[in-house]
Length: 245
Ligand code: MN3
Image (cartoon, rainbow, N blue to C red):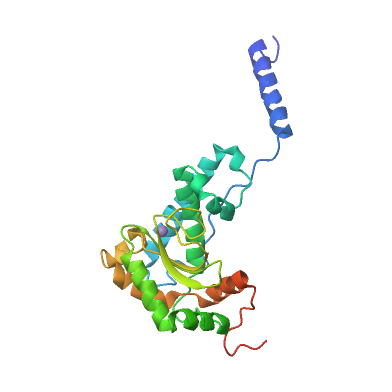
């Protein structure tokens, strides 16, 4: 009696053939991945509770990443585009891809734009000068930013951006859109700071009290990161007042 039946031999041949085909195929594009939180989930308490951070990061952000990868698997012609490039093409993307690419980009900048209270530093000399020039004072910026966050109807984001002409501006976008997207009705620019005002960002602790969440959030701003983004966008050095150089 032969070791393998004819059927088994044929199956084995098919499997070997497939393996050869796959090994000769070009390498698949690296998938997007969920970046870890840059601090423990409870590091922002009491302003943002640990449970909210875990659900928000692992499930919501994780969900955007998984759905973005699934959508890209169906559109090989978009493979190889960076996350930033996908934002810049938002108008031509299918809606689900635009939402999930936006969700991934927005949340990635969100985690790093926050730091435990007291650890976020201050605006750099250069950024402070630009803030004072555009808004009058850092307090006035905060007021405008908080008003934009509170006024966003439904789900969305509030932003401090650097516009192409070099001016700072406060703006807001709906859903997972952002100022990098080439969409009508969006004030475009390089995001320096973005605040998530979806209910999933605050509902466990604040329920419908979005203004309380916004006020508690401001002291979490990681100015060191905002300074870095501003320096990168302007080509200036991210020096903070009093810092030795
Ligand atoms: Mn969110």
